[in-house]
Image (cartoon, rainbow, N blue to C red; front, side, top):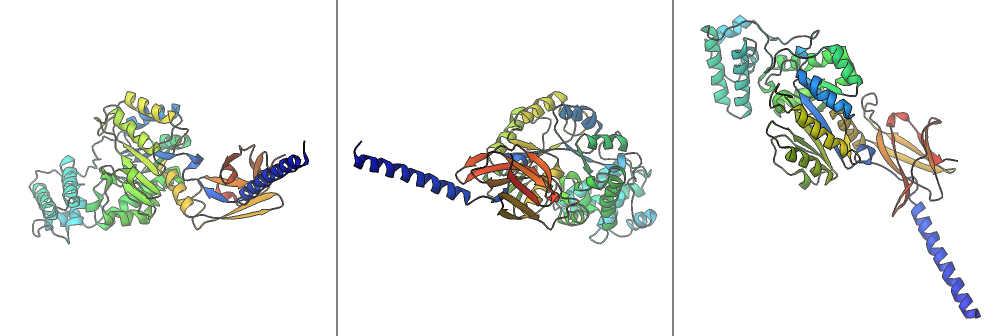
Length: 448
Protein backbone atom coordinates (compact mmCIF):
# COMPACT_ATOMS: atom_id res chain seq x y z
CA UNK A 1 0.00 0.00 0.00
CA UNK A 2 1.40 3.39 -0.97
CA UNK A 3 2.16 5.89 1.77
CA UNK A 4 -0.45 8.37 0.51
CA UNK A 5 -3.17 5.74 0.57
CA UNK A 6 -2.17 4.70 4.12
CA UNK A 7 -2.37 8.30 5.31
CA UNK A 8 -5.73 8.74 3.62
CA UNK A 9 -7.15 5.59 5.22
CA UNK A 10 -5.81 6.57 8.65
CA UNK A 11 -7.36 10.03 8.39
CA UNK A 12 -10.69 8.48 7.43
CA UNK A 13 -10.67 6.20 10.49
CA UNK A 14 -9.75 9.11 12.75
CA UNK A 15 -12.52 11.24 11.24
CA UNK A 16 -15.10 8.50 11.79
CA UNK A 17 -13.86 8.06 15.35
CA UNK A 18 -14.17 11.76 16.03
CA UNK A 19 -17.72 11.74 14.68
CA UNK A 20 -18.67 8.78 16.91
CA UNK A 21 -17.01 10.40 19.92
CA UNK A 22 -18.79 13.67 19.19
CA UNK A 23 -22.12 11.83 18.95
CA UNK A 24 -21.53 10.04 22.25
CA UNK A 25 -20.49 13.29 23.97
CA UNK A 26 -23.52 15.07 22.51
CA UNK A 27 -25.87 12.35 23.71
CA UNK A 28 -24.26 12.21 27.15
CA UNK A 29 -24.97 15.93 27.49
CA UNK A 30 -28.54 14.90 28.31
CA UNK A 31 -27.59 12.50 31.11
CA UNK A 32 -29.77 13.12 34.16
CA UNK A 33 -32.48 14.98 32.27
CA UNK A 34 -35.80 13.63 33.58
CA UNK A 35 -39.42 14.08 32.54
CA UNK A 36 -42.73 12.63 33.73
CA UNK A 37 -44.67 10.60 31.16
CA UNK A 38 -48.13 11.93 30.32
CA UNK A 39 -49.71 8.65 31.44
CA UNK A 40 -48.57 6.04 33.92
CA UNK A 41 -46.58 3.26 32.31
CA UNK A 42 -45.75 5.57 29.40
CA UNK A 43 -49.08 4.51 27.85
CA UNK A 44 -50.82 6.37 25.01
CA UNK A 45 -54.07 7.12 26.79
CA UNK A 46 -56.11 6.51 29.94
CA UNK A 47 -59.56 5.06 30.63
CA UNK A 48 -61.62 5.14 33.81
CA UNK A 49 -64.67 2.87 34.03
CA UNK A 50 -67.24 4.39 36.37
CA UNK A 51 -70.71 3.39 37.61
CA UNK A 52 -73.42 5.61 39.10
CA UNK A 53 -76.14 5.00 41.71
CA UNK A 54 -74.81 1.91 43.52
CA UNK A 55 -77.17 -0.46 41.68
CA UNK A 56 -76.79 -4.00 43.00
CA UNK A 57 -76.10 -5.63 39.62
CA UNK A 58 -73.11 -3.35 39.14
CA UNK A 59 -71.53 -5.29 41.99
CA UNK A 60 -72.95 -8.76 41.35
CA UNK A 61 -72.71 -8.82 37.54
CA UNK A 62 -70.30 -6.15 36.23
CA UNK A 63 -67.74 -6.34 39.02
CA UNK A 64 -66.94 -10.07 38.63
CA UNK A 65 -66.37 -9.54 34.89
CA UNK A 66 -63.92 -6.76 35.65
CA UNK A 67 -62.20 -8.76 38.38
CA UNK A 68 -61.50 -11.64 36.00
CA UNK A 69 -59.90 -9.20 33.59
CA UNK A 70 -58.07 -7.39 36.41
CA UNK A 71 -59.67 -4.06 35.54
CA UNK A 72 -60.43 -1.52 38.30
CA UNK A 73 -63.62 0.55 38.46
CA UNK A 74 -65.00 3.54 40.33
CA UNK A 75 -68.44 3.05 41.87
CA UNK A 76 -70.23 6.28 42.78
CA UNK A 77 -72.69 5.13 45.47
CA UNK A 78 -75.66 6.65 47.28
CA UNK A 79 -74.52 6.33 50.86
CA UNK A 80 -78.03 6.75 52.27
CA UNK A 81 -78.96 3.38 50.77
CA UNK A 82 -76.21 1.53 52.65
CA UNK A 83 -77.30 0.21 56.05
CA UNK A 84 -75.47 1.93 58.90
CA UNK A 85 -75.29 5.32 57.16
CA UNK A 86 -77.14 8.52 57.91
CA UNK A 87 -80.32 8.59 55.84
CA UNK A 88 -81.60 11.42 53.70
CA UNK A 89 -83.62 14.04 55.54
CA UNK A 90 -84.66 17.64 55.27
CA UNK A 91 -82.47 20.10 57.16
CA UNK A 92 -84.14 23.34 58.16
CA UNK A 93 -87.21 25.02 59.58
CA UNK A 94 -90.45 23.40 60.60
CA UNK A 95 -91.96 21.47 57.71
CA UNK A 96 -95.47 22.56 58.72
CA UNK A 97 -94.47 26.23 58.72
CA UNK A 98 -93.00 25.99 55.23
CA UNK A 99 -96.04 24.19 53.86
CA UNK A 100 -98.38 26.73 55.46
CA UNK A 101 -96.42 29.63 53.92
CA UNK A 102 -96.81 28.17 50.42
CA UNK A 103 -100.53 28.99 50.64
CA UNK A 104 -99.76 32.63 51.45
CA UNK A 105 -96.66 33.50 49.39
CA UNK A 106 -95.90 32.43 45.83
CA UNK A 107 -92.60 30.71 45.16
CA UNK A 108 -89.87 33.19 44.30
CA UNK A 109 -86.08 33.60 44.38
CA UNK A 110 -86.12 34.04 48.16
CA UNK A 111 -87.92 30.80 49.04
CA UNK A 112 -87.43 28.53 46.01
CA UNK A 113 -84.40 26.57 47.21
CA UNK A 114 -85.91 25.86 50.62
CA UNK A 115 -89.22 24.67 49.12
CA UNK A 116 -87.52 22.62 46.41
CA UNK A 117 -85.39 20.96 49.10
CA UNK A 118 -88.38 20.02 51.25
CA UNK A 119 -90.73 18.78 48.54
CA UNK A 120 -88.52 15.77 47.80
CA UNK A 121 -89.17 14.47 51.31
CA UNK A 122 -92.98 14.76 51.20
CA UNK A 123 -93.21 11.52 49.18
CA UNK A 124 -93.35 9.01 48.29
CA UNK A 125 -92.87 9.22 44.51
CA UNK A 126 -94.89 12.34 43.78
CA UNK A 127 -92.76 14.53 46.03
CA UNK A 128 -89.54 13.20 44.54
CA UNK A 129 -90.85 13.76 41.01
CA UNK A 130 -91.85 17.32 41.90
CA UNK A 131 -88.36 18.01 43.23
CA UNK A 132 -86.72 16.48 40.16
CA UNK A 133 -88.99 18.32 37.74
CA UNK A 134 -88.28 21.67 39.40
CA UNK A 135 -84.57 20.95 39.25
CA UNK A 136 -84.68 20.03 35.58
CA UNK A 137 -86.57 23.23 34.71
CA UNK A 138 -84.25 25.37 36.79
CA UNK A 139 -81.07 23.98 35.20
CA UNK A 140 -82.61 24.48 31.76
CA UNK A 141 -82.97 28.18 32.53
CA UNK A 142 -86.77 27.97 32.87
CA UNK A 143 -86.87 29.72 36.22
CA UNK A 144 -90.48 30.94 36.12
CA UNK A 145 -91.67 27.46 35.14
CA UNK A 146 -89.65 25.96 38.00
CA UNK A 147 -91.34 28.29 40.51
CA UNK A 148 -94.74 27.43 39.10
CA UNK A 149 -94.06 23.67 39.33
CA UNK A 150 -93.20 24.04 43.01
CA UNK A 151 -96.40 26.00 43.66
CA UNK A 152 -98.43 23.28 41.95
CA UNK A 153 -96.74 20.54 43.97
CA UNK A 154 -97.39 22.24 47.31
CA UNK A 155 -101.01 22.87 46.33
CA UNK A 156 -101.42 19.12 45.81
CA UNK A 157 -99.70 18.51 49.14
CA UNK A 158 -102.02 20.90 51.01
CA UNK A 159 -105.08 19.38 49.33
CA UNK A 160 -104.04 15.86 50.25
CA UNK A 161 -103.37 14.81 46.65
CA UNK A 162 -99.65 14.46 47.36
CA UNK A 163 -99.45 12.35 50.48
CA UNK A 164 -96.82 13.28 53.06
CA UNK A 165 -95.50 10.01 54.51
CA UNK A 166 -92.04 11.17 55.66
CA UNK A 167 -90.73 8.23 53.67
CA UNK A 168 -87.29 8.58 52.04
CA UNK A 169 -87.52 7.51 48.42
CA UNK A 170 -84.33 7.04 46.47
CA UNK A 171 -83.71 7.88 42.85
CA UNK A 172 -85.48 5.27 40.71
CA UNK A 173 -84.09 2.36 42.72
CA UNK A 174 -85.31 0.21 45.57
CA UNK A 175 -83.00 -0.04 48.58
CA UNK A 176 -81.11 -2.83 46.91
CA UNK A 177 -77.54 -1.86 47.58
CA UNK A 178 -74.82 -3.84 49.27
CA UNK A 179 -73.36 -3.41 52.78
CA UNK A 180 -70.35 -1.46 53.97
CA UNK A 181 -68.60 -4.79 54.62
CA UNK A 182 -69.10 -5.70 50.97
CA UNK A 183 -67.94 -2.28 49.78
CA UNK A 184 -64.83 -2.65 51.93
CA UNK A 185 -64.15 -5.96 50.21
CA UNK A 186 -64.49 -4.31 46.80
CA UNK A 187 -61.90 -1.67 47.71
CA UNK A 188 -59.49 -4.48 48.65
CA UNK A 189 -59.98 -5.81 45.10
CA UNK A 190 -58.63 -2.51 43.75
CA UNK A 191 -61.90 -0.69 43.07
CA UNK A 192 -62.71 2.85 44.16
CA UNK A 193 -65.88 3.57 46.12
CA UNK A 194 -66.82 7.24 45.86
CA UNK A 195 -69.69 9.57 46.72
CA UNK A 196 -72.79 10.11 44.61
CA UNK A 197 -74.50 12.01 47.47
CA UNK A 198 -76.94 10.52 49.99
CA UNK A 199 -80.24 10.46 48.08
CA UNK A 200 -79.47 11.57 44.48
CA UNK A 201 -81.21 14.98 44.61
CA UNK A 202 -81.20 17.76 42.07
CA UNK A 203 -78.47 19.65 43.89
CA UNK A 204 -78.92 22.83 41.85
CA UNK A 205 -82.22 23.49 43.66
CA UNK A 206 -81.15 22.61 47.19
CA UNK A 207 -80.61 25.34 49.73
CA UNK A 208 -77.23 25.64 51.40
CA UNK A 209 -78.00 23.50 54.46
CA UNK A 210 -79.38 20.59 52.45
CA UNK A 211 -76.74 20.83 49.74
CA UNK A 212 -73.95 20.67 52.30
CA UNK A 213 -75.65 17.82 54.15
CA UNK A 214 -75.81 15.72 50.97
CA UNK A 215 -72.12 16.38 50.27
CA UNK A 216 -70.61 16.34 53.74
CA UNK A 217 -72.60 13.54 55.38
CA UNK A 218 -71.97 11.23 52.44
CA UNK A 219 -68.26 11.94 52.79
CA UNK A 220 -68.38 11.35 56.55
CA UNK A 221 -70.05 7.96 56.14
CA UNK A 222 -67.54 6.85 53.53
CA UNK A 223 -64.69 7.99 55.76
CA UNK A 224 -66.16 6.20 58.76
CA UNK A 225 -66.69 2.87 57.00
CA UNK A 226 -63.99 2.81 54.30
CA UNK A 227 -61.39 5.38 55.32
CA UNK A 228 -60.22 8.81 54.20
CA UNK A 229 -58.66 7.36 51.05
CA UNK A 230 -62.12 7.02 49.51
CA UNK A 231 -63.29 10.55 50.18
CA UNK A 232 -61.38 11.94 47.20
CA UNK A 233 -63.97 11.75 44.39
CA UNK A 234 -67.60 12.76 43.97
CA UNK A 235 -70.13 12.81 41.15
CA UNK A 236 -72.98 15.20 41.84
CA UNK A 237 -76.20 13.59 40.52
CA UNK A 238 -77.57 14.12 37.02
CA UNK A 239 -74.13 15.24 35.88
CA UNK A 240 -74.92 18.78 37.00
CA UNK A 241 -72.47 21.53 36.10
CA UNK A 242 -74.33 24.20 38.05
CA UNK A 243 -71.67 26.67 39.20
CA UNK A 244 -73.14 27.10 42.67
CA UNK A 245 -73.13 23.34 43.22
CA UNK A 246 -69.62 23.00 41.82
CA UNK A 247 -68.32 25.65 44.21
CA UNK A 248 -69.75 23.85 47.24
CA UNK A 249 -68.66 20.41 46.00
CA UNK A 250 -65.08 21.56 45.37
CA UNK A 251 -64.91 22.80 48.96
CA UNK A 252 -65.69 19.27 50.19
CA UNK A 253 -64.03 16.92 47.65
CA UNK A 254 -60.70 17.25 45.78
CA UNK A 255 -62.05 15.70 42.56
CA UNK A 256 -65.39 16.13 40.77
CA UNK A 257 -66.34 14.00 37.81
CA UNK A 258 -68.79 16.80 36.93
CA UNK A 259 -66.19 19.50 36.38
CA UNK A 260 -62.58 20.20 37.38
CA UNK A 261 -61.59 23.47 35.67
CA UNK A 262 -57.86 23.59 34.96
CA UNK A 263 -55.91 25.49 32.32
CA UNK A 264 -54.32 22.27 31.09
CA UNK A 265 -57.58 20.26 30.95
CA UNK A 266 -60.46 20.32 28.47
CA UNK A 267 -63.67 18.68 29.71
CA UNK A 268 -66.26 17.27 27.33
CA UNK A 269 -69.27 15.89 29.20
CA UNK A 270 -71.55 13.05 28.14
CA UNK A 271 -73.82 15.31 26.09
CA UNK A 272 -70.97 17.02 24.26
CA UNK A 273 -70.49 16.32 20.55
CA UNK A 274 -67.07 18.00 20.43
CA UNK A 275 -64.21 16.00 18.93
CA UNK A 276 -61.63 15.41 21.69
CA UNK A 277 -59.03 14.74 19.03
CA UNK A 278 -59.29 18.36 17.91
CA UNK A 279 -58.24 19.71 21.32
CA UNK A 280 -54.73 21.10 21.57
CA UNK A 281 -54.83 21.09 25.36
CA UNK A 282 -52.42 18.86 27.22
CA UNK A 283 -55.27 16.75 28.62
CA UNK A 284 -58.88 16.09 27.64
CA UNK A 285 -61.36 14.42 29.98
CA UNK A 286 -63.84 12.89 27.52
CA UNK A 287 -66.96 11.45 29.13
CA UNK A 288 -69.08 8.91 27.29
CA UNK A 289 -72.21 7.28 28.72
CA UNK A 290 -72.99 3.91 27.13
CA UNK A 291 -76.78 3.62 26.83
CA UNK A 292 -78.91 0.57 26.10
CA UNK A 293 -78.95 1.34 22.38
CA UNK A 294 -75.26 2.31 22.14
CA UNK A 295 -73.74 -0.10 19.63
CA UNK A 296 -70.60 -2.07 20.37
CA UNK A 297 -68.94 -0.53 17.33
CA UNK A 298 -69.61 2.95 18.70
CA UNK A 299 -68.29 2.06 22.14
CA UNK A 300 -65.14 0.51 20.68
CA UNK A 301 -64.60 3.56 18.48
CA UNK A 302 -64.18 5.62 21.66
CA UNK A 303 -61.18 3.47 22.58
CA UNK A 304 -59.75 3.79 19.08
CA UNK A 305 -60.12 7.58 19.29
CA UNK A 306 -58.09 7.60 22.50
CA UNK A 307 -55.28 5.54 21.03
CA UNK A 308 -55.10 7.78 17.97
CA UNK A 309 -54.20 10.71 20.25
CA UNK A 310 -51.97 11.13 23.26
CA UNK A 311 -54.00 13.47 25.45
CA UNK A 312 -57.43 11.83 25.89
CA UNK A 313 -58.68 10.46 29.19
CA UNK A 314 -61.85 8.51 28.44
CA UNK A 315 -64.27 8.43 31.38
CA UNK A 316 -67.00 5.84 30.80
CA UNK A 317 -70.23 6.30 32.76
CA UNK A 318 -72.43 3.21 33.22
CA UNK A 319 -75.73 3.00 35.09
CA UNK A 320 -77.99 -0.04 34.71
CA UNK A 321 -76.70 -3.59 34.34
CA UNK A 322 -78.70 -6.60 33.12
CA UNK A 323 -82.12 -4.93 32.86
CA UNK A 324 -81.85 -3.34 36.28
CA UNK A 325 -81.35 0.41 36.57
CA UNK A 326 -81.37 3.26 34.07
CA UNK A 327 -80.27 2.50 30.47
CA UNK A 328 -78.89 -0.96 31.29
CA UNK A 329 -76.21 -2.87 29.38
CA UNK A 330 -76.18 -6.67 29.43
CA UNK A 331 -73.51 -8.86 30.98
CA UNK A 332 -72.63 -10.15 27.50
CA UNK A 333 -72.06 -6.61 26.23
CA UNK A 334 -69.88 -5.75 29.21
CA UNK A 335 -67.86 -8.93 28.75
CA UNK A 336 -67.26 -8.08 25.09
CA UNK A 337 -66.39 -4.45 25.75
CA UNK A 338 -64.13 -4.95 28.74
CA UNK A 339 -62.28 -7.76 26.94
CA UNK A 340 -61.68 -5.34 24.04
CA UNK A 341 -60.29 -2.77 26.49
CA UNK A 342 -58.09 -5.40 28.15
CA UNK A 343 -56.61 -6.37 24.79
CA UNK A 344 -55.45 -2.75 24.35
CA UNK A 345 -53.79 -2.61 27.75
CA UNK A 346 -50.25 -2.36 26.35
CA UNK A 347 -51.16 1.13 25.13
CA UNK A 348 -54.05 1.96 27.46
CA UNK A 349 -53.80 2.81 31.14
CA UNK A 350 -56.98 1.58 32.85
CA UNK A 351 -57.29 3.12 36.31
CA UNK A 352 -59.82 4.49 38.78
CA UNK A 353 -61.11 8.02 38.46
CA UNK A 354 -59.15 9.03 41.58
CA UNK A 355 -55.85 7.55 40.39
CA UNK A 356 -55.93 9.25 36.99
CA UNK A 357 -56.92 12.56 38.57
CA UNK A 358 -54.10 12.31 41.08
CA UNK A 359 -51.55 11.33 38.44
CA UNK A 360 -52.42 14.32 36.25
CA UNK A 361 -52.36 16.76 39.17
CA UNK A 362 -49.09 15.36 40.48
CA UNK A 363 -47.49 15.65 37.06
CA UNK A 364 -48.62 19.25 36.77
CA UNK A 365 -47.31 20.12 40.25
CA UNK A 366 -43.86 18.56 40.40
CA UNK A 367 -40.39 20.01 39.97
CA UNK A 368 -37.43 17.69 39.50
CA UNK A 369 -33.90 18.52 40.60
CA UNK A 370 -31.31 16.29 38.92
CA UNK A 371 -27.67 15.98 40.03
CA UNK A 372 -25.10 13.90 38.16
CA UNK A 373 -21.94 13.02 40.06
CA UNK A 374 -19.71 10.10 41.04
CA UNK A 375 -21.19 7.85 38.38
CA UNK A 376 -24.77 8.20 39.59
CA UNK A 377 -27.85 10.35 39.00
CA UNK A 378 -29.76 11.77 41.98
CA UNK A 379 -33.35 12.98 41.60
CA UNK A 380 -35.18 15.14 44.14
CA UNK A 381 -38.90 15.83 43.75
CA UNK A 382 -40.58 19.03 44.90
CA UNK A 383 -44.37 19.53 45.07
CA UNK A 384 -46.85 21.58 47.09
CA UNK A 385 -49.51 18.83 46.99
CA UNK A 386 -50.42 16.90 50.14
CA UNK A 387 -48.27 13.73 49.87
CA UNK A 388 -50.68 11.72 52.04
CA UNK A 389 -53.35 12.19 49.34
CA UNK A 390 -51.39 12.54 46.11
CA UNK A 391 -49.36 9.35 46.25
CA UNK A 392 -49.91 7.63 42.90
CA UNK A 393 -46.62 6.39 41.35
CA UNK A 394 -45.45 8.55 38.47
CA UNK A 395 -43.65 7.26 35.39
CA UNK A 396 -40.28 8.91 34.82
CA UNK A 397 -37.99 8.99 31.80
CA UNK A 398 -34.34 9.60 32.69
CA UNK A 399 -31.36 9.76 30.35
CA UNK A 400 -28.36 7.68 31.45
CA UNK A 401 -24.73 7.44 30.23
CA UNK A 402 -24.19 5.54 27.01
CA UNK A 403 -21.61 3.34 28.73
CA UNK A 404 -24.12 1.86 31.19
CA UNK A 405 -25.22 -1.68 30.34
CA UNK A 406 -27.80 -2.11 33.09
CA UNK A 407 -29.40 0.19 35.65
CA UNK A 408 -30.75 0.09 39.21
CA UNK A 409 -32.86 2.63 41.09
CA UNK A 410 -32.59 3.13 44.86
CA UNK A 411 -34.50 5.15 47.42
CA UNK A 412 -32.91 5.75 50.83
CA UNK A 413 -30.33 3.06 50.01
CA UNK A 414 -33.12 0.56 49.35
CA UNK A 415 -33.24 -0.93 45.88
CA UNK A 416 -36.71 -0.38 44.42
CA UNK A 417 -36.11 -1.61 40.89
CA UNK A 418 -33.27 -3.22 38.98
CA UNK A 419 -32.47 -4.70 35.59
CA UNK A 420 -34.29 -1.89 33.81
CA UNK A 421 -34.32 -2.00 30.04
CA UNK A 422 -32.19 0.70 28.45
CA UNK A 423 -33.82 2.36 25.46
CA UNK A 424 -32.39 4.83 22.95
CA UNK A 425 -33.64 7.82 21.01
CA UNK A 426 -31.96 10.71 19.20
CA UNK A 427 -31.00 12.31 22.53
CA UNK A 428 -29.31 9.25 23.99
CA UNK A 429 -29.92 6.26 26.24
CA UNK A 430 -32.78 6.38 28.73
CA UNK A 431 -34.80 4.30 31.18
CA UNK A 432 -38.51 4.32 32.05
CA UNK A 433 -39.49 3.57 35.64
CA UNK A 434 -42.38 4.05 38.08
CA UNK A 435 -41.80 5.52 41.50
CA UNK A 436 -43.83 7.42 44.06
CA UNK A 437 -42.60 10.97 44.70
CA UNK A 438 -43.17 10.13 48.38
CA UNK A 439 -40.05 7.99 48.31
CA UNK A 440 -37.81 11.02 48.60
CA UNK A 441 -34.41 11.20 46.95
CA UNK A 442 -33.95 8.71 44.13
CA UNK A 443 -30.49 7.48 43.09
CA UNK A 444 -29.93 5.89 39.68
CA UNK A 445 -26.70 4.06 38.95
CA UNK A 446 -25.23 1.32 36.80
CA UNK A 447 -25.84 -2.13 38.22
CA UNK A 448 -22.98 -4.60 38.34
